[in-house]
Image (cartoon, rainbow, N blue to C red; front, side, top):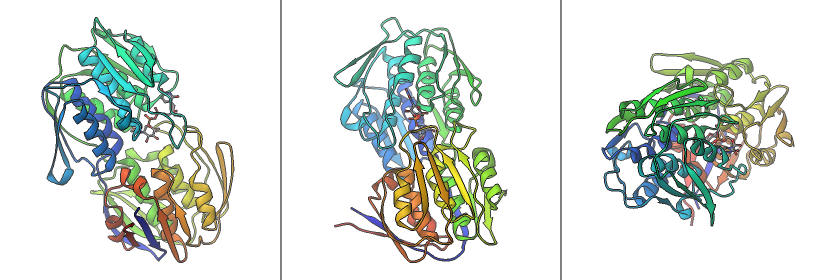
Length: 422
Ligand code: UD1
């Protein structure tokens, strides 16, 4: 297994291009199942999660071609052969469940494996099921698979979600595009990836309004057609690399970044003493003097502070002046990076969903282990700001969500290399 060797060094300077959003791409790809005409995505990120979704769509009979070094995905669901998402693929990636709504809407049936346990919490699918049932689907759990059918087709309905789940919103919105009549989804999630999905669905002929607010209205249409869509910028990759100059000092411009994607995060960086400004080409981030100050963070659905930046923010707080409290409200068990950061000399106490971090002057390099996608990148950031060498093992997690991480960080002056495993 490969590992990453990071040697802590001084200020970073230069530019980092930000890729298309993994989480947007993972919901845009299943949208191809809604139409028999081709859907083409541009600005796709080159990640293993995208390969997993490609394999899943291909297992259903869809054609997926990866063009221009993986940045263009040309898909066609003209001749699908299966409506079953197998456990062997779903267990690798929870987002596989996003084929449920589209398959059900187009074919009146779908069989999708439950994702099973996940390192960052239980992550059930009850909110997806409740929403699709509100549209008239009959869903049964048998042998670990959700068996869904809608013999007379889905019908529009008014449905209020108990919690603004991102995935459930995406599944319900996609299903409702082909339902008979109007669906009003209340307490919908408002993430930019959902706005991006709706923009694509609209290009395919869907009639949707209210995306980006907590009430989304969908007028069902008989069929959707082909489209080409550019994937929105990855706000989590953006936020992650914004932390690089915040931790190491210097000034880095994140190309393609926009403030509207990371507003709540940028507010916290500003309070910590990190300068963020919008430029013509992206966002410029600088930390010119001294240590950052401790700030408290509570993770919340968008537009709140994203749970997917909590681990990276904790890495920053490890060397801040003062004590910060980080509260994780989206996932239980999402502090697995804390004991690894402690190995590097951090002072962190975890009680339930709250981590209290008292900053130390400088972290010290150590061998550490990546436990999930965001945890792994937080350890790389910590290693870049630490004294000496840090080896991060199990970096396959990283390949799920960060393309060319070594090249991008090297480009701004970090000392980082990938060591090939045996
Ligand atoms: C998406 C993102 C993930 C991010 C998360 C929260 C993708 C591919 N992944 O995941 O990176 O961390 O949003 O911003 O877009 N829940 C239920 N029942 C359900 C569904 C969810 O209880 O039916 C719970 C989950 O266990 C979790 C919380 O709701 O505690 C948030 O989950 P959700 O918003 O659905 O996240 P995902 O769509 O899985």
